[in-house]
Image (cartoon, rainbow, N blue to C red; front, side, top):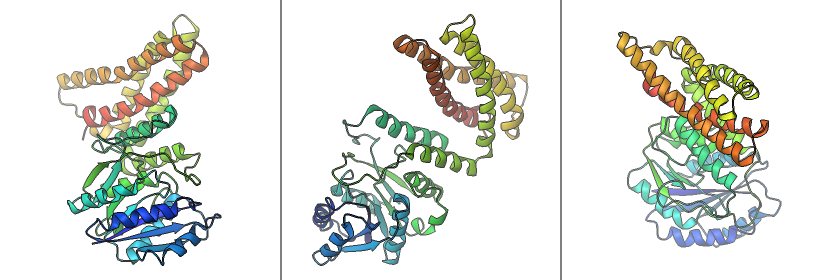
Length: 370
């Protein structure tokens, strides 16, 4: 089996020598022909020149130099195409900054040997870790982004959607992907590629990894990663589900009712948490009517009065749970940071996002299921 490890680089002169030396040690422990393909975006620090020098010492090392920097996804796609031209049966994505431990390469290959088509180095399964030094917001975005993707894309068994350390079987999978059609050439390519492998029927395995701190060099992380990921997830769902698009439109209408009433009640006779509860209840009735007669109209299952009542009861109970949670969150936040407009509305919006994910899952899988 031909295994090609694709490594995109940009200003990795401080890392590349050590990385290739470790890979050389690891490759001899893998019972396959392993090669490394460095895809360099014409690094100003001369990373590609170092790779050229190393090629005489390491015959398994290959180099692809690109004239322009088009994002980490674009670098990987160029590398995948080159790897397939080299006859790869398996391609592995791995960064050069030692956040991915090169000693884990053999574990990913082993998963392919076991019959899996897609081995994902996962931080969010038993045995997986993220750096303790990460700030809370980065931990929240990393874990929360994967949770959001899991629910919206309907992949409950998968846990790490933004891992960049993966092994993919080429035949029937990577060779079937139109890389020009991938929605992002930046950080969010990971979500799109993973979803495409899922749609192709790839057999997944999540291999626990310890994600390290970046060693040296320039980060490939862009400032708009969160929005890029959100856009890709929603577009993937849009392309696959008209119900979700209608659900979002109804959700927007419900949000307007909820937001206006919640702020209005709060400024009149009710406390913040109580205002959230009452406004949420009214918005819930509004969205039920719109979802029932528009978003999920083709899924209505009206068979007798008893079933209709049962459906409404399930809807009310399930919909009010995130409203209760939101009110608790508002009460906790206002007590801790003060009951002002900013704290109230920031917490309110966070509760709305959580409720959106919860509600679509319950509505599409239980109340208006196919």
